Image (cartoon, rainbow, N blue to C red):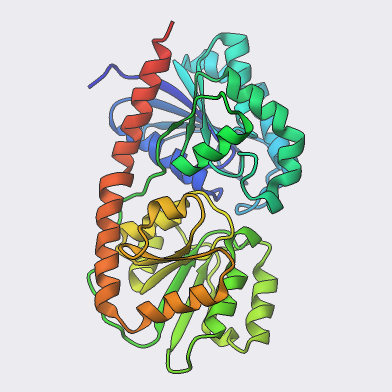
Length: 385
């Protein structure tokens, strides 16, 4: 084992605040702590959670940042966090003396790492997650990227390393910064904490599950339209485990298509309950218009579920089309319908895909391997001249 390291991880998302980047930070920090290292997390305050706490060897500092909802944040809330974190980070760094900082998301967290390097000489890494990369989700993030583009490029250029969580995201980032060196450390899945599905027999309606934010980028309206086109002899039920601004419009759409009785919005499911929810389902669905590599997707694979998704960056790298799931083009209603039909009456195929997906999650996306990559990187930049 290498000598124990102190590492500062900066992220405005951290459980119970919702987001794949926060889930990644949570697991990476715990894996580091389990190996005897000392991770310190700087994140946003939430309700009555303590401002400083040690959880499973991870020290968490929370700063007030106007956060109003666990599942959603506005641009102003991100700016508020950046300002609060920039005010608090130097004191935290002086107290704990980390040897490097990892800023998850170039914005709003990259400027915090940049400031620490400028003021204290602390090396920092930018971890690109998706929405912080110009060109990702053009409809959703275009204005944000336009005004913040110069800040992003400066934060990237001054970083000691820039890491993307998929090869496709790295390629997209290079369009904005052609000379920027960008490496890849994949997103991860809690494989060891999730038992795999063993029973793939069809009992009652086909159970489809989605877990994540109910936002336009996830393409859930496309999925609902696809479900409405299924043959009448296919019985099904859709569970949406999440919340967000699209909830009302999705419920209205399901009502207009006369399928509201088969669509259940569960709200956010506690992380401890998610593995059981996944194993009880037959298929995980992720009909995204644009996406990175959501933690829920990888956790569904770890649970042994076949995946029906779309050919968007991140998803297309995680899911092997025809082997661990089926992929349609984004916004392809008929393509999603065909994929659901293909798996609905074929439990043997669902089992083969689910088991192949779990194996892929174990080999490529397990958190111990991902954390080891981050530790190697920190060792490299902290000893660099």
